[in-house]
Image (cartoon, rainbow over all chains, first blue to last red):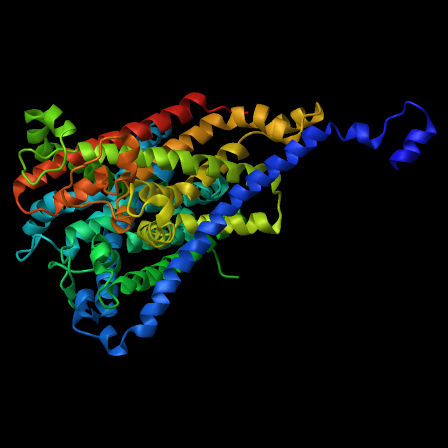
Length: 315
Length: 311
């Protein structure tokens, strides 16, 4: 082709002229390869996470006696790995967290999306963003210094200094801004014409919001709750500080007593990873619980993601 | 067809109804419920700040300089946050050096080069899932890879291993926020550069990146703030929770000296000590950490508002 062009007429353009300088093309290829390698990094991180989790988790499952997975409690350094204790502890904390985060988060979201004037919204949104940025260790401290002594002791007579309920409330405060922001996005995505149609039929504001906007945004609202649950499941530091039970915990359903969640158990094992190395399976159990947590949160996030995308497709 | 029965028995009722006499009890109740929920959410933030001040003001007012400049100590009267602040600064530096270039580069590839290829779609899904992985799981990654497998390079339980772990943690956030910033740059900017004969890299380097810089900067500052508040991965990777004294004096010696801590780790450690004096110390340290993070977030929001361009 290039030759055909050049032989037609002397001095005509060749394909080589249009390709630009060779140095530029080389640089272009180089930059492209560099950026592609950087994009690969995120895939490598995922692969390494799965690899490092599975290697020790499999060795745990292979070497642990099945009987020690069903015991009176979680005491990894004594060879008692009652996973039930941790799962129930996690569910209790998550449940309490959702009792706080869902009504407050959804209420705030409905108000900001449907009732608040733009100026009010512009003031309140950054405040919620600040709340979202509070580190979890600080909320762990808040559970110990405020939630237990100022709130729980007034409501319940028999509360210990470290307890699951305070941790649950603090985790709820932590997930609240996330629930609020996902739900608000979903409700703001509902087209104004739906609201106007409701008003046109003579409905009051409360009817338009609860019977039209809310159902239209329901998949986003479900997503907000699912993502909130996933976040609460994986929250570590609040529980590690405020729920007590650093060494281990007996199986218990009492939320006003110390308890143990999956994440807190991992944190407790993690503090002593250098000492724990030799102990029977305690080090491996850290990765086993980690794998469990990874699988649960990953599934929840994928479900949440699906719900989020459903609303985008609809309107 | 059934006869349509008018809902009002006489004209007076109809007129009253149209004039909306009587208060909308249900609507008002609902509205007050919403206002209550929002106020309660905002009140928790107020309670948190009040509580930190109530506990921590003693320490901060009595010995502000000494508290900021002295190290960890078993004596409540002497303990300070200096080692935590220094550790957090070093961790932040490593996070910035490692995760910012890689994250921004990955975002550039996904937005500018990849198009809608299968690889790009897989990476996108992967990043979204990575962003939802609990932070403590990243700690296990750090323990298995950066501490054990790469122990020869990182020196084991050092600030380098901790920094790399946090860098992996914020990488998806850096990528996602940078992608949003790049996506906000209109296609006309790129096409204009390409039409004048620029290569793709030249159009990115000289036209797309300058336009996207404020957005990318906002994202990086936010992710740095996130990294500085994290404690769970550091706990597993092996930041020190007890008292330690840095023996070596040189900067590089300290990096490889092995023992390090961070401000959130100091808070974690103090919060679990028995006695009201330690809780006061925890309150003071929390106030410093929150102030640091709020300032960083505020700076990011300021950047976003100041340089945000509507195309």
